[in-house]
Length: 173
Image 1 (cartoon, one colour):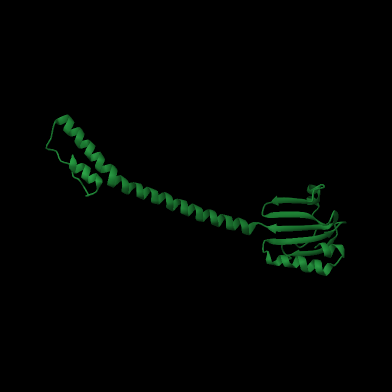
Image 2 (cartoon, rainbow, N blue to C red):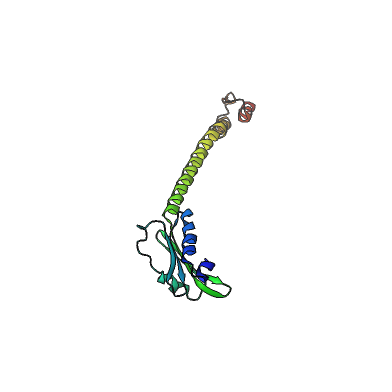
């Protein structure tokens, strides 16, 4: 872009901005000279930006800085000086459509929510299995111990359940 502005080569400037076609989110771009007159432009579709205008609002935001950016609903605007050494040759303005990015973000949030739901559901299922295998047999044993202690019923037996460690503990009682 520097050479295109330095030599006022509109054809080269148009070809350079035409490479933005590979970036689907870029909907509009302008290469301006120092008088803010368009040298070249690019637009993804004429329906998106029917009138090619100079982004005066960004020049107001820029106020001596080399770049300015602006977010709005569904759009990101970028304005930068094009320089050669310390000399400003012109300006590059790019407008991007953020709607596709928003759609991708929503899709990823949906996937994240589904994964979070499945993880929570799995945790509930696992805790239920562990409760049945560990907590319930120990609670039955504790009730039996209370019954033996209160009623002195030494003939009381507790079902050991499975042959795991909890079952061994209950059999030992």
